[in-house]
Image (cartoon, protein in one colour):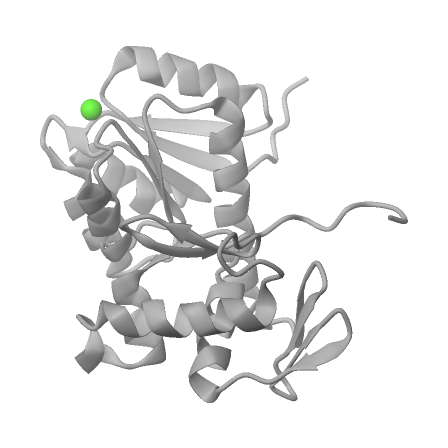
Length: 240
Ligand code: CA
């Protein structure tokens, strides 16, 4: 049975084999598909068909997917998940800084792709609603943004203003990796974009206050060479 109302995905990919794989695996999970093999086709389809999410290859015959991501970000917040054979840290940072929401390296598992897409779609949905949840909860951690209060298993956690902003930023983008540059820009301001040690130092302090084992964090995860991600697990259904 096909689901005519599933999210519309634009697959920007020039390799026929990869397109077949994505068509089969996304189609069987209720997604509707549009396909583009060039940046020019992709741009046209984003403009005319308004997809819910874009899967973006970087090496395309008529240009670089990174440039397309930058162009799209000038006027649309459509979630962009880069799916590329380029696996270097620099490539990931460049894609995220260009405005991609996430980055997957080929070859990838379909379940991993679906999980990343769900995070990106959920985030876009929240951004569209313009109504940020007053209280964010991650396991035993609660962030009450109206009172600027953080509790861990019910006990108050005392954060400095910087630590609070850092935690809130990651929590607002839960499940997504934020680059050092993005974190610096949001928490410290555009003038501090090269002071990556700020992030390391304050992240270490934040982990001491929030993680049971700061050296082996379960919530505030490091993406080596790229940045940080707050683990986002959907709440379990039913009583725990
Ligand atoms: Ca390619």
